[in-house]
Amino acid sequence: MSTSLRRVLVLLAVLPGVLVVLALVYMLGMQHLEGEPREFSAAFMWAAETLTSTGYGGDAHWEHPVMIMLVVMVQFLGMSLAFLVFPLLVMPYFEQRFEGRLSRKAPDYEDYVLIYRWSAAVESLLEELMRAKVPVVIFEEDEALARRLRARGHELVYGVIEDDDFDPKLFTRARAIVANGSDPANGTLVLVARQLGYEGELIALVDEPLHRRPMMLQGATAVYTPRHVQAAALAGLAHGRVASRLTGIQHLGGKLQIGEMRVARGSDLVGQTIVNADVRRRTGATIIGQWRGGEFNARVPGSTVLEPGAILVAVGSEEALARLGELGKPLSADGPFLVAGYGEVGRKVVEFLRDAGEPTVVIDRTEAEGVDVVGDALDPVVLQRAGLHEARAAILAVADDSTNLFTTAVARDLAPELPIIARVGRVDHVERFHRAGADFALSLSEVAGEILAHKLLGDEWISLEARLKLVGVAPEGLLGHTLSESEVGRRTGCSVVAVERAGEVIVEVSDDFVPTPGDRVHLCGTEDAIERYYEVFPHSREPT
Picture 1 (cartoon, rainbow, N blue to C red):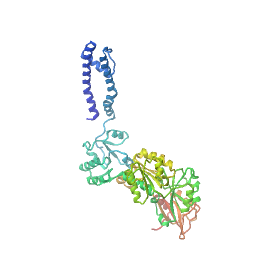
Picture 2: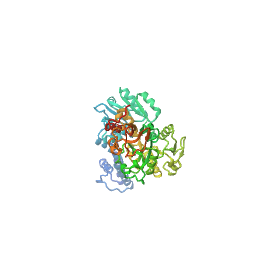
Picture 3: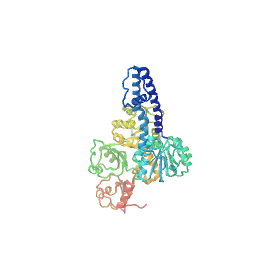
Picture 4: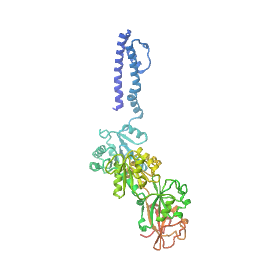
């Protein structure tokens, strides 16, 4: 029996007794105070009319003050029933009747992924599974949340694992199970599923890293700590935004360097395409990628319009990058990383960065070991005292999205060119952080969804960020033509960034450069772009 039905039955049982008591009191009052005795039926009618506020028949006037007070009190009691008791007890029952019952039975089909308990951590996973056309069933214990999820169109089963209130087939028919409840609840789910004979993939998300091993011992096939994975991703964005994306550059003996530059609002580049800005001829540097809205685009054709705030990734000689910096605002590769928030995620970010040999400055409201500046990151004075303007980047790791969002706006106002990396709780808040000024916003759902999708679906379903490679190729197909005439970028998505000629490395290669026999041309691009280059210029691949 549901709670709402039980409440309605209690109300129906109590209401007649209340009417009888009021009728008896009214009879006594009319007989001894008004001197006008009433039969029980008339008194009962009066009580019903008063409680329901429908109006009076014969009795509508009283003389004695006590009777008047009795009538007024019963009238207010009736109003209370109308505005408080019925909405709290009766309406929920009828709402459930109209909404229909939540399903407690396993679906008739098999081979679905079962997600135990819904939260933002599994939102991205659900999108990946839907993209892969893998059916998903959510097992939810919160009735109100279950109804909201069902209203959104999700396949849902309602029950309570601890009360054995579930359909055993829900587990045995699944192809994989993701446990996303509290650590104790996840442990119970793992044991129950294994006890029922489930032998498939069972992945658990835990809050406490020390619970990983006990969860594995109970039967989980894989256990992850999403907040620590998020911290590693934030530290990775800060520490290796560019260098880790471009492999092969070390083979040029330091002749070619990588740099990042923000397109400042007052720059001459704003509003121009890369071709019209003539960046390569004016600076000698080659733009090989662009950060925009937190995403790295490894293919930037000449038609790309340069917008204020975008971060350009370029390669070239030290002098070429310096000239490019005169057109925009070079981002510093020196200085400490400023970390705001020293909770679980913030501590892990600092740990990862320090393990990589990077200096950090930590801000937190609470004084503790590892905190360098005690204060509120929303306070501009605190940010400046922590060295915001000298920092290489700011990593905002405060726990709640609202505080982190406003901290992003404050930091961006104080340091317009500083790279800002923000921790986000809900994936649907990411766009807000970009609007507030964050260059990179990473949600818990994104990192949890990626590792879970990788585990359940394999590499082909992971939305991996573009990785750049630097490779040397023979000049076949480019001989006798300028690089502009060969249209390498438009046709393949690659960029020619350097040329080896007679033992020398030429790193300032203009669009008018003409390769000659014996040259070794160095291309920069994603693996897909390099494969397209080999297809367009089939004789350029060097023997391995």
